[in-house]
Length: 252
Ligand code: BEZ
Figure 1: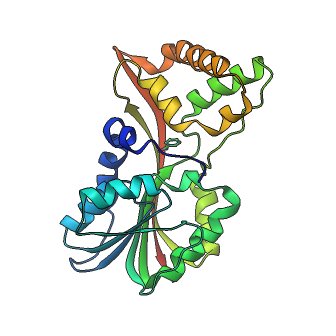
Figure 2: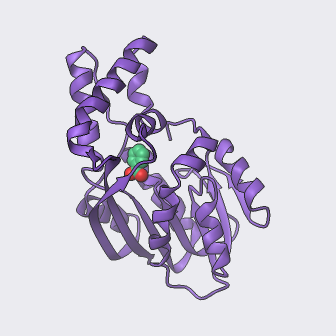
């Protein structure tokens, strides 16, 4: 994953990420007491939702910044530091759950992540997840890419947003049977009058490493915000053009 989180701001201003995750939790079909690993648990907000449902939960995340919030907020839950593409757990679990994480993993690394998930699951264990799907934030990325190009920079897309077909193929190759898959648009309200600027600054860090001057970075963001207004500023509120891929697969 290629981001250093501003964990406090992420938790206060981008809480929609875990709020929407509640719907993904509903896909889990397991009795209370079943064991669940929350992969990429971040600040632990959804791990806590799973805990409150009576599951035996553990969270793994790469970010110590986010884990320190999780441990402070939810001391009864075990949180571990780990890389989603290179982890192992001692005792296999009934369910691996993940929300808003896999788009941060390079396409080439997805099979490594799936192998770790496979090994972490009991036979017939469920793999339930949602993340950014094909064409996620297309309007925002296109605007930024055009502005980068006009100014002589290359906008390297830092995320992986697959179609259902592409992702199902990877899952099947990794030994999973796909039971449910959906790709859908979710126009998502951003917080505050600087919602789009804040969103770009929080999540789009990597492409800006190509731009040396801090002033030019600000100019690019301002230009993007101005251009995005016509499509994503609606009735006085900012929105991001999210597309979600939500799936459930079973370890064979
Ligand atoms: C997402 O949740 O789809 C997402 C959030 C930030 C950057 C990229 C994708």
